[in-house]
Length: 100
Image (cartoon, rainbow, N blue to C red; front, side, top):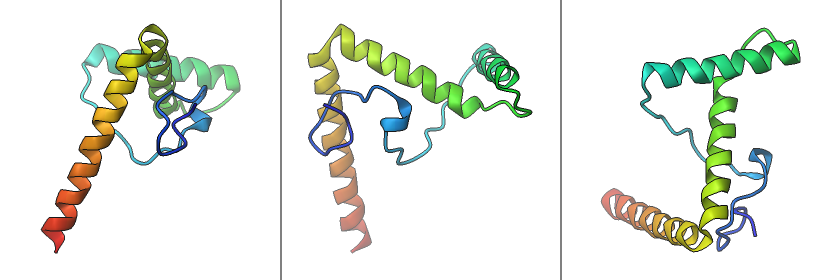
């Protein structure tokens, strides 16, 4: 199963398989910022690119963390996805009611 369908809860194998819906802004400490930029610079250098892509590093790390969480406890992962899905639906319904 992949997250490309409404009812699926398993993560897709790669970032390319995901349907990104929005950017997530995260507050991170300076060392994390430095680490992400260092990873991005290393990848850019290896690929012969001028500009590092921190966003790609963040997506790659998130994909890795999500896959690890799913592998270690698929039921907890499914519970979290379904809980989040219900909350997003409730928020959307609330916004619709507020707009009316």
